[in-house]
Each structure stands twice: as C-alpha cells, then as structure tokens.
Length: 74
Image (cartoon, rainbow, N blue to C red; front, top):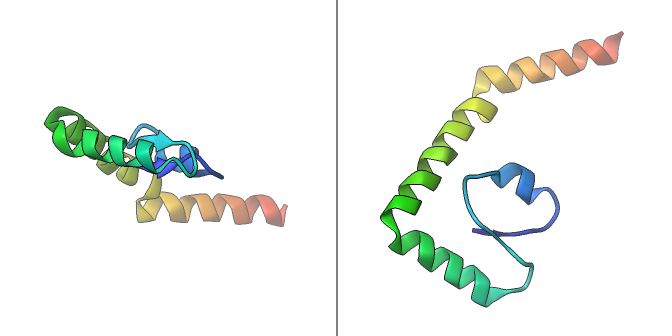
C-alpha cells in the first residue's frame, strides 16, 4: 500500500494498492484488506515476485544500462 505520488504508480503496478496522499484512513483500510484477504494477499504477492523477476533482475537491469550507454555513445 502506498500513496499515489510521483512515480509510485508506475513502480507499484498491479502489485499493491494506491491511496490518495495524506488519506491515512484509506491507507489503513487498504492495508487491512490485504492482510485479511488471503486470496488478494497471495495474488498481490505473486504479482510482486514476478514483477521483481521481470523488471528488476540483475541481468535485465544490466542489459538496460548497457543499451542506454550504447545509445548515449552514438
């Protein structure tokens, strides 16, 4: 659960819930929902694990940097 500020939505994707900035009640409600709904918890957890593998695995990140450097050097 996070607030919808900056680039958080892009990073979070479908792996969690966004709430309005400063809305502590919405934050608490979203967290309670995830913690008390085993199916939702598992679905979000699985999505987060897969996103970490797909987007942030070392090889993938290194390849992105290499591609960026190659473009900058052209």
